Length: 76
Image 1: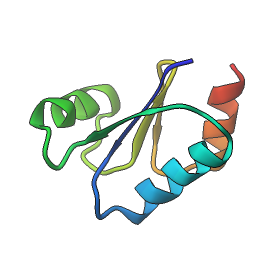
Image 2: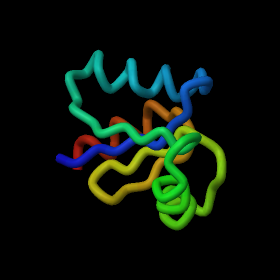
Image 3: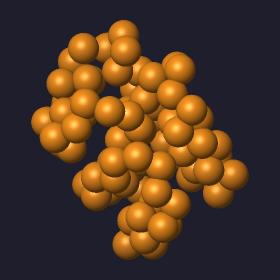
Image 4: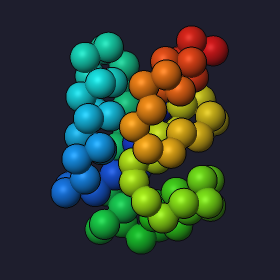
């Protein structure tokens, strides 16, 4: 399973999403789009969004911290 989260250090919903993944023992890769312009462009290309968090769960793009969408994507 491949889980990526695009976030920034000051984003409260990003922290919630990361804590939720950790509490469910889901490994993930995190990219700080505030300092990594390449990953920021990748996030916008994948999601069409400039806001964070954006999660990529096995190709399923989730914008924002949406527990139900995260759970559904993880069960695929």
